[in-house]
Image 1: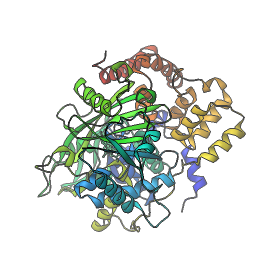
Image 2 (image 1 turned 30 degrees about the vertical axis):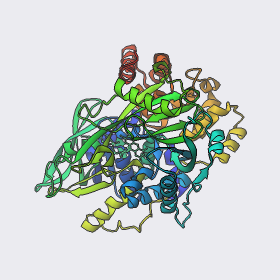
Image 3 (image 1 turned 180 degrees about the vertical axis):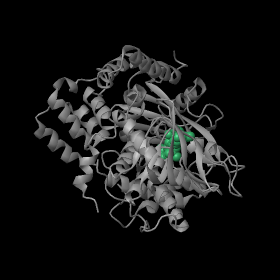
Length: 564
Ligand SMILES: Cc1cc2nc3c(=O)[nH]c(=O)nc-3n(C[C@H](O)[C@H](O)[C@H](O)COP(=O)(O)OP(=O)(O)OC[C@H]3O[C@@H](n4cnc5c(N)ncnc54)[C@H](O)[C@@H]3O)c2cc1C
């Protein structure tokens, strides 16, 4: 058994960086791995962690940045999916809530409890007894008799109490409400941290590397042919087992479908989100609401002290899978939906900080509307030996990986990897308790404003200690990148020096939440400030720097094209 201290050292040994990318590729080319995983979203990262913890040698590639697919574009909740109770999916809700509880206990800085308010409204589709019943079932399903318990049980509040709890909420027809608990996360950061858990146990992983074909041995898949998209160089990775964890791209990688498996397997549906300053909506809790436009369920979710995320939609999607964007119709739908419940909200286009869109990897179920398609995952071995896993929810990444390994155990591909259920519910090396962080910060002699301190803690856990060390060497690194947000220069250096972050857009969209919370009108100023640091760290010439800024600004413009 590897000691925690040794793993912790590896977390900060600076080998998983853009500068070491070439070395990692060389190793990938010259190794025979047990497992190669295509796709480094939450699903691929979770499998890499599970495989590395079972002492298998692992390589992971992603054709974009890590988490650039759906895993940075979700509603950013680790949750059980309370609304699936209505569709009878209690097994899914039970396992998801229990995984949520485990993460909240073991990764407390990143998986944070949040109260969710469900209003009881006269004449509404859901009556008081329905809401009370559903929340009680939700509590019951997730209440494990283990160390990973519910944060708190749900509770009913009278109309007067709700006036106090959610003062800006529309009072017309309001007849009280229920508050239950789920959690919010940064989906992309969680993906990166899960991947790091694999890397410190020996896995090799690179981004911007596309698998385009398979190496075959007697008709069976024995590795992948891929291209390093940074240098346009093809190379091969040999492995006993190839796992396809490519989410919405799953069908591109399957060459032979087992009988009874729908072809195509994935039904992509799109969901968009809008981001506002909290003061522009006025919510204090997360709210689960039915849209007055079409009766679809959506959320209004606080993030940090200052922001609110609104979403999502759920519509069939046929466009470019890598580049979905919110359009005017989506934005107007969400604005109208929120306005019904927060009549004084200031939801003019100019108050939209940013938007993003994501595509769900839903597994085909004929004859069901988008919102009712199951969120369960599916695992299949094709005749040529490709193991595919897709569907599910990001909350269930560990459970999905465990399930996959049960299939691998059954096939007896690797000896001695069997583990009992829930074995991989182990602590994360990066995790840090808030009190510990506050002590460390106090003893460091560095003074940070409370909002910045909170932001660093919840985003980076133990990584925040390294950010403090950077500030000790150069106090100017504690300056804000943009005066109205809490992102600071030191955290940029941290993600460049401890994580493989080749491009400016990776730093804005996946390593930090800057793309969400910096107002799109100030994105260029922020991009220029961050690009200066990257230019110095990566020795970019001016042309590269300008191209990087342009690429990020093109993304920003597409996100808010209906405003500009
Ligand atoms: C709008 C929306 C809201 C959601 N909200 C939640 C939520 O709040 N909570 C929750 O639990 N779940 C939520 N989900 C579901 C969750 O986000 C997804 O289930 C999860 O992110 C899927 O992860 P994945 O790793 O399977 O796919 P992805 O994250 O898409 O990863 C697949 C990766 O494969 C890579 N890839 C594809 N082809 C290749 C190739 N040929 N070579 C190399 N790499 C390749 C892609 O670049 C991509 O990074 C939401 C989904 C959406 C769309």
